[in-house]
Amino acid sequence: MSCASGTPQNQRVKLQLEQLVGASPVQSVGRFDVQFGLQIENTSTETVTLKSVELTQIGTGSYTIRREARSGAGDHYAFNQSVAPGQSAAVSFWVHAFQNVLPGTFGASEPVTLRALVYFESPSGQFHQVVQKVLGQFDNQ
Image (cartoon, rainbow, N blue to C red):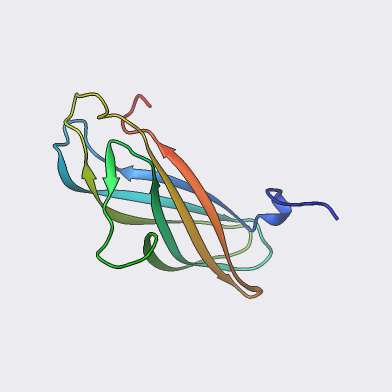
């Protein structure tokens, strides 16, 4: 028996996480909101439905994702987006954040690393996939 982990046969969807709106180059220290986008490409032979995304930050960065006041390992964002076989779809969501450093200082452009646990439903059952992304903070990254 061979291991198929990471092969296209084992991957029902392809995921791409992007930061759509982040801190501005003149962002002051404090609270602000970040918009993320998730691109989903359905490579399976059945319709899949995106149900939720659990987002967590790995390490430090120029900003920190702010946790909601509820318990749990990460913050969940609910969806009900169906994607037909061979099709793609995109969703976006806003997250509260806290800018850690002053603009123009050391660390102001430090990348932010995120991990998204993405939950789906399909006719053959529920499944999840993980996507991790290092997000540069300004155009030159």
